[in-house]
Length: 315
Image (cartoon, rainbow, N blue to C red; front, side):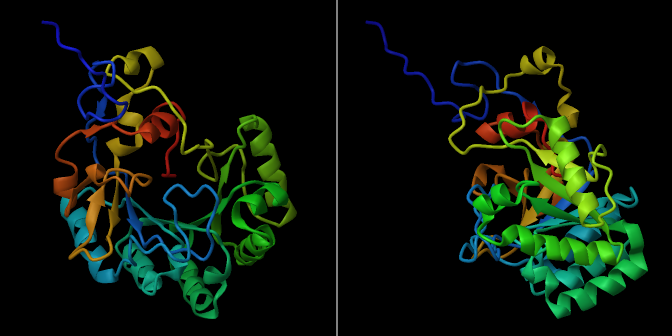
């Protein structure tokens, strides 16, 4: 008697695709960037936030300096010198200990990249008063990357709310006037050509006096637009050769992110800056644990953002 074989759902098996092919994975190639997620709380709620940050989402709680220090110690123990440390959220400048965390990272000699929307949390007098001496002491080792959903005010506000673009411009102008090292992180509309987008963001930066070379991908990071209901193909082991991709160039080959879940006893490490809801990508409580095994590309965003979209959160 024949048995009916039911097909798997896509992205349901860490080893095999729905068609039964060997799923691609990414081995660890050494630390390039350690991300610190200060929590999912944010002063705004974007229509398409990658990790659903909002004024009420505290599924990831604020990191404390005590959460961060063991990971900085672990990096020191590697003996590999300075690394890039990225801080993201939520909105990092809502985190009560953000200035202490930034200072600790910079004092150890690392390069620090802080992702912010440059809105009211960053513009509070206490934060401004803490940012300026950090800039004076550490110069271009501190970069603030300001996120924009478009170079067009109407498109940006459609994503983030009325007046959000003008408020971000105020923050960017404050940073530009004090000659902070500033980068932009923008999205490209689905219909937009990358060259046109870079030119438009460059013109925007010039209008507000921001030092920016739009052709430099470290100064202007353009992310592919991602749709939550997108249905990309699964990435198999054969795809690396077919696509001409090197798995060592994929974000999880050299990056990890520290989070602290609400109610958790300690901070833990995830494989990816985007996949904080999927606990399958939570890899351990130390960097050593979180880098011991390859990461299976068992999520739609592994395909659409990283492999096919070429996205990376690092500079």
